[in-house]
Image (cartoon, rainbow, N blue to C red; front, top):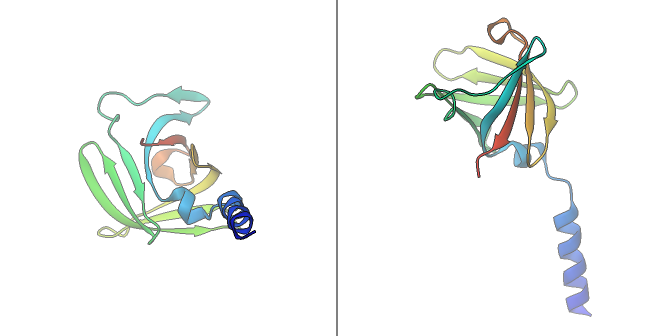
Length: 124
C-alpha cells in the first residue's frame, strides 16, 4: 500500500507544471531570428552566443565572445521579460511568445533589435 501511495505521489509531482523560473533557467542558444518576415540563421560568429538564465533572476549574455551580466524580471500578466545590464543599466524588453523545456521564443520590444523575434533552444 505504501509503495502504491509513493508511486502515485511521484507521478503527480512529475506531471505538475513547471514554474516559469524552472523552464527559463538554463543555457539557451539561438536557432534563428525573424525580422520583417525573413529568417536569419546564426553565422560563424554567432554560433556560440548564449542567454544563460538562473532561477535567482540573474542572466549572463554571451555575444561575439564577450559576456554581459544582468538581472531579469518577468511579469506574467503582460508576458514581458525585462533584462537589465548590471553595469550600464541598459534594458532589453521582450515579450515571451513561447516557453517550453525545448523552446524559448522572444519578441524584442525595443528599437535596438528592430522588433525581431528570436527562436532559442536549450544547449544540450
